[in-house]
Image 1: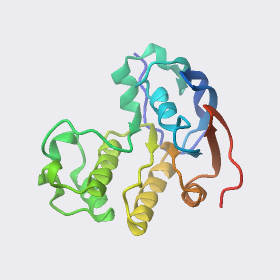
Image 2 (image 1 turned 60 degrees about the vertical axis):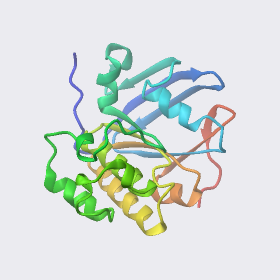
Image 3 (image 1 turned 180 degrees about the vertical axis):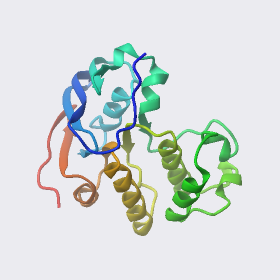
Length: 216
């Protein structure tokens, strides 16, 4: 099976979505450049989360998705989702402890830096998930996704439970990852956040994706 590697710098378009559709969503066509952040806006119920889940191959649908010339259809679901990770607004946890959700070979020094940057407790890896706040779980879920070194990260309201200062810290961390080549599709209800994090702004309305109006 062809190897997909994490890009080291922004470059030409590498994520191509053609005719992606499911019930009430699509067809959607979109191309994203390597290292690009695209903000996706739209009213509640317009299909933003469904769109991200379709890209991640988590929900049934039709259409073609290609990453670095490799058609998603040639990969297994788990292989695809190791490189194209969906970051849910309400992340799932399959174990009781925080540490078991992170890959064993992770650079612990880098993780400690991320933990400090996002104002999480220093000993949070030893905590039980059930004892954490909603905001702490949301930040940890983001770090869990980044720890798996995705090529594309599909963000579904990743700062919805965070205060303004922590929101800016998350945005700064993701901006660094983007500069290193990570491609972001970022769903947000905030036009202000969209203006901060992305140069391209799209709106999903009635299941169709189109250029957004004024974002400021």
